[in-house]
Image (cartoon, rainbow, N blue to C red; front, side, top):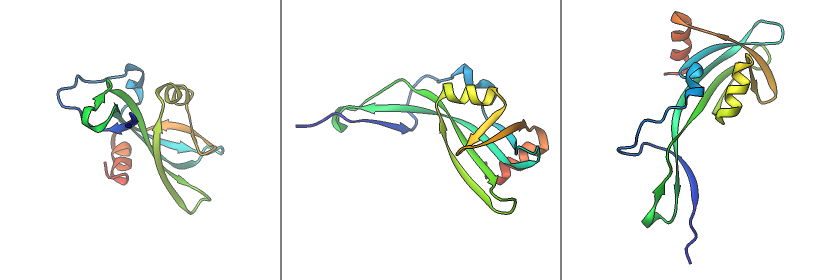
Length: 131
């Protein structure tokens, strides 16, 4: 007996229509400075979007869902003023919009204020993340 599996994959599906979630437009490909509770720079944040497709069914008769755009985040955070912690992940769209529109970002229980960057500052942060 074969059991259908449901897994999430980040991949490109040939001939699929463009997937755009308009709620993510203000945050797509954005860079921000993370500010600690004292208002001083405590790290940086990079936001990128990717389309996720869900595969279901046995491998010989795989079917794919319509894509859904998700927000990926990458952060570099000073942990004690000296050590740099780098991490990343993805956020559900509703959570991402609620959190980022409030002007804050929670990185594992540590709350940061967000200062959006543009121009040379944003380009420098992108270089740090090799993007």
